[in-house]
Length: 264
Length: 283
Image 1: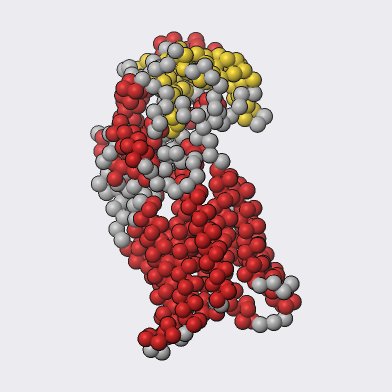
Image 2 (image 1 turned 60 degrees about the horizontal axis):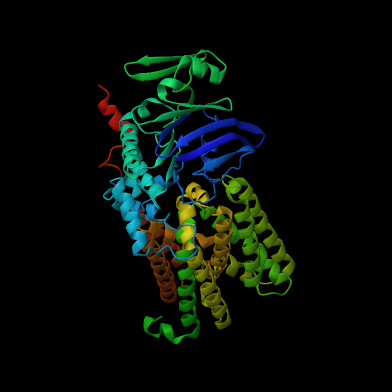
């Protein structure tokens, strides 16, 4: 079954066009890595899939229907924020805040809600972490808890916005492996945005590369070539393969890693 | 004065009741205020209230209602501005000082009691009348019911704003509703500790509770408990010593917060930060 269909999708942020007439079809159960420089539309695309940003033109279909704001089809892990890090609250309370979090009333979970939280935590093996104050957890451990939160309600589509940001390579690998395992076990479709392609190489089924309002969807071998990326960016780009890693170099320097590395 | 006869006085009984009612509201609302990093907004609301209270005196209304009307109006405005208010400390500060300035003008025009000004600025829990107490209690019930009704989305929007928005929650609606509740809580707290010291009831107990607990339920409970204890102990100490209750309440609030700072937080000693671990991995 088709999970995501982008049909000549155009997205605008104010005056700026971030995606212009993009076509793409993603099947159910695929693990898609989404790449591109800052401002290339990765977050905008996720927001459009969540129904937070309306297409300026063209259409999106999720499992055959247009995206609906607040739909339980999508699980979402927003880009990491620092606000949580200083709290002494237990991970459990943070994860549980999302159970029916949009409904009025007291934040008291019934037996069903508690089971749901326990299931999500067990799925990412975070039962133990959830008992500790979030303040005491490392960045990778917080991501693990937030991934559990994204799994609440067993969504069919998991949208992960830069879950690797500010994690060191060791933790990046463990987050990718965890997402891959969860995706396999639950048969979910995953869109995983990142700045660097290398940590995701073993996990992805296909790559969605964004740039200059356009998009290129294909396997790593199809997309990560000098010809395809040069065409996408309208500038000469070299793709080097070094010891099983991929390094993207533009005439003005490295496109992928250095140009947009975030401060940790 | 002997403590045995303390509750023989009508005004003392009313003071304890008022202190308890207000502590319930200030402790519970304050917990979310601190969690949302909105303490400065609470401070600003109370100053806006000063212009309302003195303006009400000028036109012959009870100061409490003028105060409440202006804090509610300012709370709505702040909630609507929402995110745009973040980092606007200067703008808030300017409005805050303008409100105090207007209050001074209104008091000048009113040409009366400096006592009124002192009571507004520093609180006067011993001067609460039976009618005041009834109004305080009714507003307390209303704001606690409202807080209970919005507490689930409020918590979600506070801890996970991006996710909450993606799940269809209106962050702005939650923000406006919460600041309306804060406005009522501030107006109530002013009756006890005054405009300048609202922090002592709204922020001190809640900030201590956040450092002492690891769950929301326990946090709200401890915050309310601390606020109630500090208020009634403050009133008792004032009775015994003749120093004003506001002084004792602020002293207890600060002391308990400082003690809470001393409680070890666990830190990240058991789990080194990524950077440190990465350092170990590199040869």
